[in-house]
Image (cartoon, rainbow, N blue to C red; front, side, top):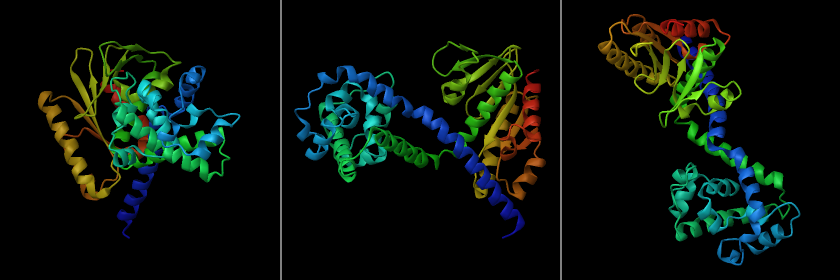
Length: 348
């Protein structure tokens, strides 16, 4: 293997695993997996309002049903899916699906019900039909019963939630394969927000929905950074702002509303796609320069071939280029150079 190929492969692995780590954490928060236990516990005071007379029609095996009924620390609604319950609380489909160790794709294939949009619907805009609830309950309970039977009727509460986490991890891993570019953008967004905080410049965060803002609160920042996709940018105390979008990925807005800088983040780990990623960034920069010939353009990219690197160095549409892998370490020289340039463009 040539030296250039070896170094590109090493960089591809570094960027891939670094972004994968942050992606797992972000998705765990996005899926709200850790909140499921609390949601189920909140229903325990009304557990007596759910009749289980129809359990034989809901895919529950007799031995599994008897075991849970006699268990000291497990309740039926903690383990088995009641069709009425998921009609009342559709968001809990994700809980029972993960307890059953089934992916969203598997559910759609097995019972022809697309649960993805329902699981993320915090406002309960989507309702389940009687038929859908019955299909889902039977599917989940059949698999949960198999799990209990395979444990030789010894499953514990901790093991139950262990399955929940393991299943969520498998789902996150499956979605990671198509998300490296998106995660690179989210990481850079979080770095800029944290840097604004460190420089005492952060005034407020701008939600994607509505016209309100969330004033900076140090106690809430970690939660906000973990859900960065909820925000379309931040406002700085010097009357400038940073906006997150696409083409460009990040816009630096001056105090008079003009775009003073744009940042493109290309986090692909495949060197074969380096030319395509460069072309997409160049197109975005050309459009920004067409609107304002004085705008500063910054490219953050990884896994660039020698050919593409040479093109970047000779490209007048790119004001600055930084290796994305190098700036992911907040203590690196390249990281400090990048944030200094970005905030200098904003007059900060």
